[in-house]
Amino acid sequence: MPPNTLQDIEQKSSAITLSDMEMFVFPGLMYSLVLANIMSPCLWRWRDDPWFDGLERMKPYRRISRLKQYIMDHYAFNLDLDTWGLTTKEQETARFSSFIKADTLKKSNALFGYEGDKYYFDIDIRTHFGLNKYEGNIIPYWKTETVEAMDAFRLKPNYATGAGECVSLAALYAAALFVVARVPLESIYLMTTPLHSQNFVDIDDGLLTNNRRLLTKTMWFNGTELSTQARRALENEHVTGVSHVSGYIHTIYNEASIDEKSYSHFVRRLQKYLRTCLTPEIIGNFLRSTRAFQKCFQIKWPVHGTNRYIGLEKVFAYEHGSSYKITNRTRDKLLNGIDSEEFQLASLPDRIVLNEMEEFIQQHIIDLNEQQDFALLQKQFSSNCLQAQNVLEDLRKFCHVEPMLPVTRAKKFIQEEEPLRISLNMTRAEIIRHLENIRMRNATADLAFYAYRDLSRTNTLPFLLAAIQRNPVSITATIKESLDSILAKIKAMPDISIYDAPERLAQPDEVWNYNRGDGLEKALLLANILRSRKQDERIVIEVTPKAAVVITQKDTYCFESRKKLKKQTWIIPLNKHGCLQLT
Picture 1 (tube, rainbow, N blue to C red):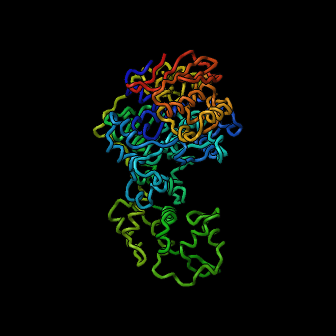
Picture 2: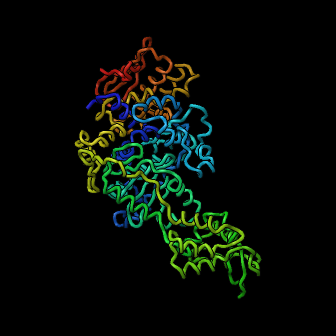
């Protein structure tokens, strides 16, 4: 069905480029990308890998752990903001002006000025993410990749594996959890914040996927550097959107399509995952994560039958590179392996003895939210070295993270006319047929075919709009080259598309970045570059099942194609309404 409005075209073209800004403005795109990955033959081929032999006999957590290691081995986390080129704040603000206010973008999106709360100011988050080099109105296209585009990173210099940024990895994880690890889609929730994207998996005590890694509830509270990094988003950022097989909820929109009961269940389960009781192990994990407090604690330990003392920061230093931990049953092995000269005979002044603190916690049931318990514990933390009030407040935050989720108050829940209803016993072909059957009654299913880049099942206008308007890398890279030189480079590229199906096409910058493409994709790449140089000139692409011909006022360029698209004509540039002309 062809797009009826310019807004419809904008959303469908956004499903193709999938930039950070587009996915923020059109939150339904997140799950459309998940569905596109679920439809991908690349993902289903994972099931044939020997690494997953016997997976069906494993329990859910072991299946997911197996999947995690596969992703760790085959994908790198990519935060190269230059991969997909640059745009301007003015251009993107104008583009989305009919959908969202500029002030809302600025408050909620990292590319438009968001820096989070005090924590992010303290660590200079713009420098951390590399955004500080984009001054003034220049911002990068922060694009999300399909699984094929993620796999194709291995074709780029300095990449040994596939790669993707956090949203790409979250979408890949969600799809792979379903296809490979056999986790029902109903148990997978995708969370986006202004600076991050991760998933909550509703099995056992809950799991978080965080970039390439997994965190169980135990890992969330273990105080290691990796878990501290993983906690950062939920501790310090508002969750702007939650996507689920039933729909989505987003902070800036009054209507939510997610099933209200499913969302309430998710909120309860996530809150439970992010809370733990105070135990001796937890107090040790907390101190592991907060180095500033370690210098105020010591451990008492018998050395040759005599109690000796050692600063806690020294003990934690010995943990590095060791399989022994101070916070579990291997403490004795860790401490017995420390040279005796590291210990002192006398108690270290103004330091709390951790062993005594642990005994106190073991003997008392402490609820950090109860003022009486809080005051009782405060006495135990009394020391000239630190302020008990401050350390206890941090301890309470460590044990009880309160996620800043979209609130349901004042939200109007509106479900899709036709729910997705994709089950584990469906084959890939059955899923595609099912999505095609319901796409007129389910917007997410419809957009999935655009994210999937299927030109046999979608209108061509959105694909061409994305190709001509939002592929700046190939233009910038060739700006100083002659047309003959550019044409020679394009012709020399291997005639191989990163999308192996005949109906699926890569965008121009994907062809350029991965240095390969079918003849039709090469023709569109050339047209993109030509249009940047001759914006007023009419450029025509004649498409047939076996060839693509680019026609300008003076020249004709022919490319053989294996994409087998039906005969059609694409006329570039855009007309005054922002639409490309087709015949």
